[in-house]
Image (cartoon, rainbow, N blue to C red):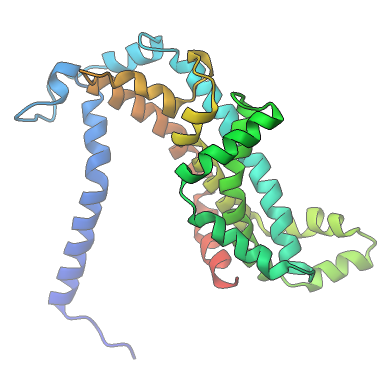
Length: 280
C-alpha cells in the first residue's frame, strides 16, 4: 500500500497549489479589472479594484475609434481557421504515413519534425519572406496561413504519429479486406478513432495562428484593414502614451475566441495529449 501523506504535508501541498493558482490567475484577473477602468485610472500609485469602472473601453474599441477592430477580428478568424484546417489535414496525413508505412527516410523525417521546432521565429522571417515573395503571396492572408503551417504542422504531425501508433493496425487490415483504398481506410476508419488527437492538434494550430505577432507584422500588408488582432492592438501603444484601458479591453476581446475554442475540445485534450506523448 502507498504511504499516506501526513496532515502537515497535505496542508503544504494544498497551500502550494493554491499559491500557484493565484500566481497564474492574478494577471488575467487584473487585465479584466483594468479593462473596465478609464486610461487615467488604469495605472495608479495606489491601485483600486473598482475605480470609475464602466464599459466605455469596450464600446470604443468595438466602435473602431483607434482602428477597425471588427475587420481585424474577421481577418484573424479567417487566418486562424484556415491554418487549423490545413495544418490538421497535412499533419494527420503525414502522421498516419509515418505510423503505418515503412519508407526510406522515415526516421530522418520524424527527426526533422522536432528539429524545426528549435529555430526561433526571428531566424525564419527572412527566408520565409523570400519564399512568399517568389510565390507572389507576400502581404496576403493565404501566405500567412502557409507560414503558420510551417510552425504548426511538424509538431502536430509528430504528436499525431504517436496517437496513430495507439490505434491497432488490424483496423487497417480489416478495411482493406472490405475493399477500401489506403486513403479510404485512413479517412473512414482511422480518423474517426483519432478524434482526441485531432482535437489537440486543431487547438494547437488555432492558437498558433490566433495570437501570433511577429509573422503577422512581417508578412501582412501595413494597411489597417488587412491587420490581424494581435498586430492591430499595437495602435493602443503610442510613443509617449499607452492607453491601458483600451488595450486591456481589446486583450479581453481577443482572448474570448480562444476560450470559446477550448471548451468544445477540453474533453478530448485530456485523452489526446497523453496518447500522443506515449509513443514516438
